[in-house]
Length: 382
Image 1: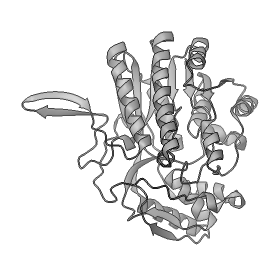
Image 2: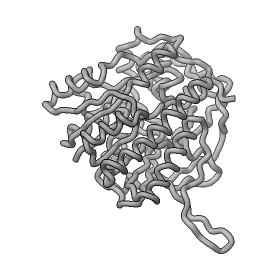
Image 3: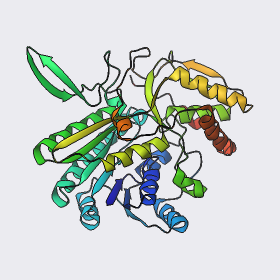
Image 4: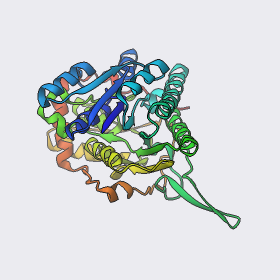
């Protein structure tokens, strides 16, 4: 089976490419280095520099003997994406190729426009290229639990049955995004669902919670294969940021009261979930939706976990509540269903003290390279 990974240079894209290559799939990766460029333009950087995509694939072949084909270009450009699809002819497309940051999307008008134009245009081109060149392809889109928001009812797994005036129908679960980035992800879902109905596409939408961690089985053989690890407010996920802040002696920045609750998962489980989606494709004209997370935590709970683990390693960690720059409910009901992937065989990697210690010890190796001024920007939603 040929797997085409869009956004193959990213935090999730590169580990996914290695994981599927190791499993025997024929893998190709596509990227235009947008995230690297945005980070450079905003004066933020990962914990340590990672090789470019050509170098990564060479290092991977040195270690495994396996090839990963590389395409560098902009998927918004029809000539480029049509070339990729016609040459590689994928059986499955994994769509990570989006501006991935909620804070960046709220930074300024130009950032908002880039988020909209990139995310919606790329998704549309993926749909059009799939229909034209490989209509039986299975599209796996990385969605986000942030599409649902925090409704005062249980969040079902993608769909909800509605009874209204003695009539019944099944609908996509109502969305109420928490940022412009999350709004574009809703638009992606709507585009895909439309063309599932009209053209009979086969689509899986993975509603993923925030991911943490850096280690995957495939990267353990060579540190040069590790994925990027962002710790700044724009591109770093909350637990990764807290760990770097703890190592740097920077107070953990808890927004508002810290009661915001979300579903989280280890990066290793992202790889499991994507592989399970590949192995269990929908039929033509079907949209599968899975809520992709393993545990729920409030921000306060995460901060306490990091503080406790770091203290056992001799680090003194302060927690600081700051004015919440985001427009969000800080105390809310949150009970999302997430049984679909477990039923398919997901074996969760839980956030244990041992797992936290491994990440903290990794970050400690790069303590001197942490730039404190890059940690917090105070991007305001309103």
